[in-house]
Length: 205
Image 1 (cartoon, one colour):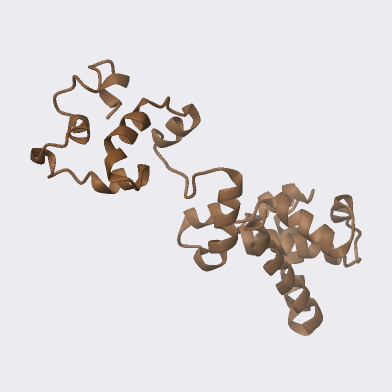
Image 2: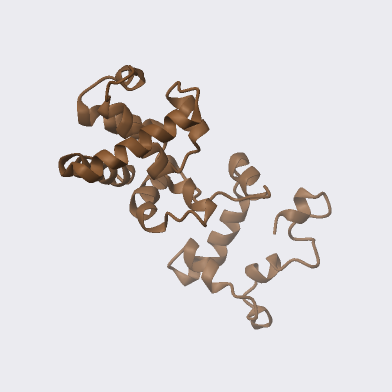
């Protein structure tokens, strides 16, 4: 309804082809417009519907929100961080699908994975970036595995995160951890527990 005004064509009340005036009218000739759905979001009191609609239309538009909605691609989730985190924690584990690229937008952030792994192993983040040939750094390897498992990050992106130059090195860490989990139930339970903590933790932040 504000588009004609934003385009400099006419005001909301003056634009002939807008249904805006239908929302303001109580005349039955406008009953063909499905106004009730919108009105009920504004007020439960039927007598206040038009008044609340006028007030709503008078609000200044949020510039950030407007840019998002006018963009070519909308985000999978739109809202404040507390809301988006809640959505991620509630739905990511059920909606994660490699064939649906947008589902990755629900994935936990790298910082969340790093923080959870460090808390779990009671270490500082710097410990995750230490790598010695022939040494099995479990927290580091688990973090790398979770980046791939939960975020489906590319080997290149994970390598950049953990200061690893070769993609093959990242792949080797992941495959080595998979084999180790297949042999060691304790490690497998640890990783499963961490996945559960990371995913559920999103909805509690």
